[in-house]
Image 1 (cartoon, protein in one colour):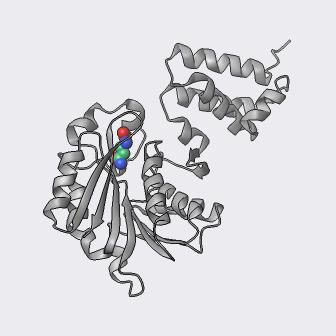
Image 2: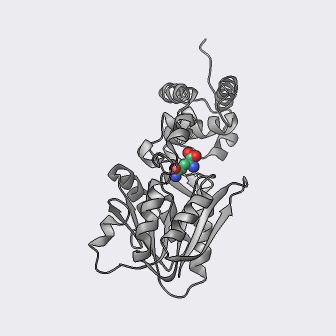
Image 3: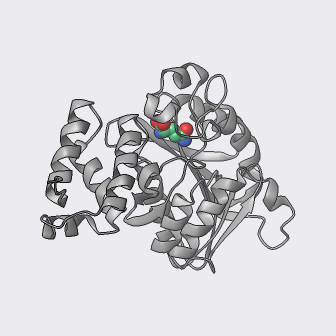
Length: 291
Ligand code: GLN
């Protein structure tokens, strides 16, 4: 008689395979993949341990397990990612949101809470829209314009903005940094500009984990020879789009604190400029106020 595959048996099998092949977080990965195939919440796996999984679903599951064993990120396999307590759609056209980027959102929201009235926010290099969505969701007075050069990423962002009912307050525009804003007569100066740009240097790019390098979009990671290309352009352009006392908050690579601070100082637009560490004690966030 053919083997009956229950949820419990499948989880045990997946955890075993993922552990053997040194896949990150074997149990979590197994639960995320299985719950996605069965269209159940993770918690429901535990309340349906003995449920038999049918053939077509087993086929789909095998396919995803195989891809996971080849190091494809689980978030691309399930098409989902949690960011700042929001469930977001992700796909290979956009970077998978990182937990470090939640710190950027945290600082952005704190800055906005210190100001009165409606706040105009610009999110550059929005990708799947994670930063724009998290700010808008948690700060109802924010009106956000988010731009990205990649229209495929923007269509994912559009789904996320719609899913979280933020279409009235988050506008998505395709183009390079501030380029799509130039033609806008209504918003020219922002209270806050945020950006998690591509910042990986050419040397670091070569050494990236296969999981990142083989699957995530190079345009979302590659910051040029020294990783600072986009910061140079942001430092040169941002002053013109920020209100006096408005802030620029950037995510940076762990070795880029001093270099990004220097670029911003050289633009003669900002004071003070502060570098902040993330939970791994790496430089991660730069906040610069327009003087
Ligand atoms: N933190 C990302 C990584 O380590 C890089 C993100 C970025 O370039 N904005 O892969």
